[in-house]
Length: 265
Image (cartoon, rainbow, N blue to C red; front, side, top):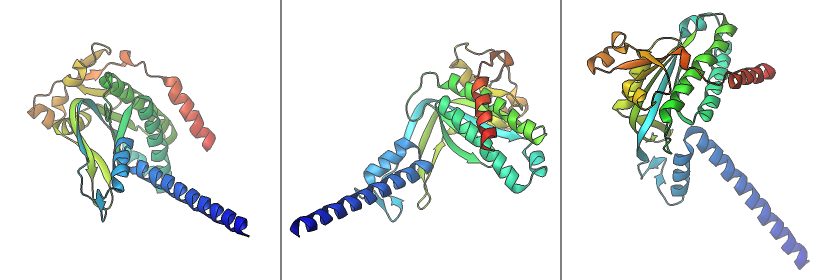
């Protein structure tokens, strides 16, 4: 009888441990779904030590990152596309497109910061420095312009991508008390946003700072961004467009991804 009781107690203990481990893994997956891994791991380490109280941080999770490239991309013709689709169709199409962008982000070592409606933005060189951050971001932008062709063909609209890239420094950290959110801030982030708004549909628009980091790897043309955006004009930002001659992105990668989406349908 004593042996049986010991066996049952051991079994119960193992079952409780297994449940706790499963709950821990679920919490970790949930945390990683809203925060970058390096931040999530830091918060998880501090959580047990009382760094969080009533959903609020006692510790500030902010880091400065130098020599990074910031990419903003916006869907041009989104209103026209929305008018031709039902709400469920629109959401499904955007989800497929942004899922494809996330795969590209993984390939080109981008940290996706946020999706804002029809805008997608990411950073290369965070949290770990990457020597080729500018080239990686340009390839990301070129691939995004190619990826939108799938949506253009599917919706029979003139939808396109406008991509802007700037290189500089950012502050990255967590905001919010109840709903945590990772974001990046700096004057360079604002400039990258204006590089997108001052860009041209179907083209990758880069700042002089980004071009200086490319070491002639891409053929560029004058961007004239100051003629399309007052912020760029006010700050005297010289811009360039990546020439189509420089487009060496892996179209096979995108085609295979499109085939996967078709198979899912």
